[in-house]
Image 1 (cartoon, rainbow, N blue to C red):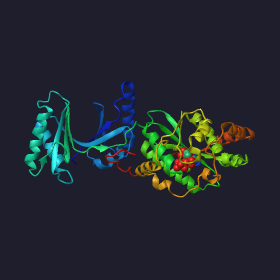
Image 2: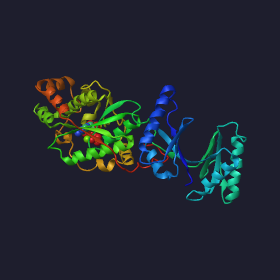
Image 3: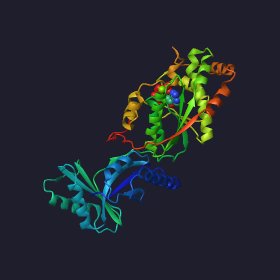
Image 4: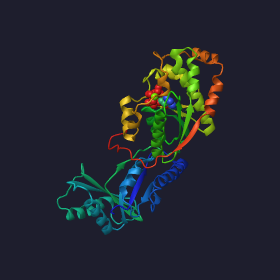
Length: 406
Ligand code: ATP
Ligand code: MG
């Protein structure tokens, strides 16, 4: 096994001071948790990086898992050697020879973090590059656009040699920025919103409203599948709240305000979620809304709906186009599940012309005329079932490659 470690580079250097320590501690916990199926791995922190020592395990599946964790910007499988010229040269040659296809051009980029090392970075580029060229005579140096950039990172104890930099998901480690409730439907958008919230370091609990028997077990299975997928990215089990919504919906239908029905349902959803948030120590609500997508997602609609709760509403997709959302859904592996046919509790009761510009006072009046709305909301909270879901063994996300996620 050539590579003996994987180095993880963290995100934002703007995260400083005590936050940085908390972030690094959380990062290590998260990595350990995600790699718990692999025995024998050890860890080392150094200069704001985390080194995962493989102790004989192949790096590929481990790198694949790590690239989907949040808080890691990039990672590289590395060969570690003593900080000694001949050993560094030997490692460099081994890395070049291990490439699946022999490159035409390369360059060495040495970095001397340990200033007492006898050769500076420039000298090392030549000393290592010359050694590789002598052993692989068909190779040429190209400093501007090499096929392979061979990096040599010289530290006091150890020198790391590598040529691959794998882009990872970025963001903050899971649960390093507070907790929110995610409104998870079976559609395309809300799992993507969940992934984006997780990426920002939010701990999530998912909330799904079902209208059994109008919505089927299939619809529920689908949401369970999506929640499990999200738990793959957080690396921790995710709690799913299944809220019985049938009675509230049938009651709202009786208000005879057909075009306001979606507005009323959404407000009821937010009220219930607010109570669940309170019970579970969450401070915000994440939804998959995107401006203009449907009648309930115009700005006037969102204004009236949002007034039903005092919690911050986090809408990661608000300014994204559908094709961008779909692209992320495909990459994170939720798209295929999301497009399975299902009935959502809201689409079942969809009126012919839902209001795009509801009037808050009228909406409040309609709600006040429903005698038992508060009691129904409390009953729905009480009747909510909880499930704790984990991902089992799931495949990694599609590699983002050089371009950004969107
Ligand atoms: P999605 O693709 O996520 O279903 P959508 O574009 O179909 O979104 P709507 O159906 O209007 O949009 O829903 C807007 C948001 O409301 C969803 O993204 C989701 O956060 C929330 N939501 C809708 N239906 C449910 C449900 N049955 N349970 C929980 N949340 C829901
Ligand atoms: Mg939907």
